[in-house]
Amino acid sequence: METVERTLDKHGAPVYVRKEIVHNRHVVDTLTERGAIFVDETDEVPEGAIVVFSAHGVSPEVHKTAAERSLKTIDATCPLVTKVHQEAKRFARDDYDIVLIGHEGHEEVEGTAGEAPEHIQVVDGPDAVDDVQVRDESRVIWLSQTTLSVDETMETVSRLRERFPDLNDPPSDDICYATQNRQVAVKAMAPQCELVIVVGSQNSSNSQRLVEVALQNGAEASYLVDYARDIDLAWLDGVSTVGVTSGASVPEVLVRGVVDLLAEHGYGDVQTVTTAEETLTFALPRELRPARNPR
Image (cartoon, helix red, strand yellow):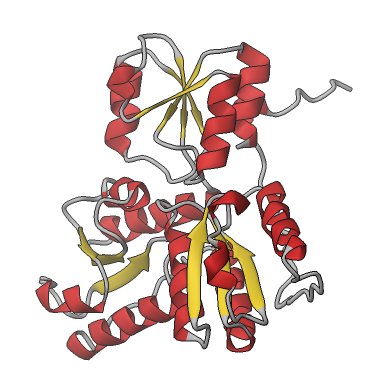
């Protein structure tokens, strides 16, 4: 998000963005108002213009087509996604069959699979494991989309290991720390809540997973909303305790709006559930970093 804002500050509007920079309607609408133009593919960007690649990453083919159109590219791919891309390239070089656990058609999955399409098979959940075909059962590794349900991913891995006992694990965990932390917090919170409200957009994978985790861990109901105004007050009937969480890319102002609305309807006693402290920060793309002062 900051990458797009800084690009607009530096170069002025319009700035083109391939796909949604993050899957959040408020963020996309706010950046559109500032002059960002969101497109599906680089061929929609005028030749020579600036295009920002979204947090979900892109395949080498997208970089190639952008170069052919002389586009000035700024890559806002999340470093955690970049890590998975590097893993895919490394294991493809070593001639492994790579099982990429993720949602078919998701931008992140398309970008990662594009790094080594001849080596990567996408597996969309445990039920798809039976369709996996490999050349050498001793040279198979699994990687994953960064925004999945931790529990469902491990269920898929377990099924894969039943078929391929020598299945290799990735060098480090692929699922985003922010995604994991929110799922852990919802697991701790859900048993105490009749209702869990997740602030996030419908096309946000990690937000959708939070609804599922809430329902699987004791909440009687859970709903995904973009804004406080999306809450149906009928959801509150007979409810004494409401849980509130948000997707990883949701601005705090939207969460605060939900908390304030709940306070107006009798839920003013707020207890914070903390299961992790997040201190990790990422650098801006090189093109947008402040110039160093020469000594």
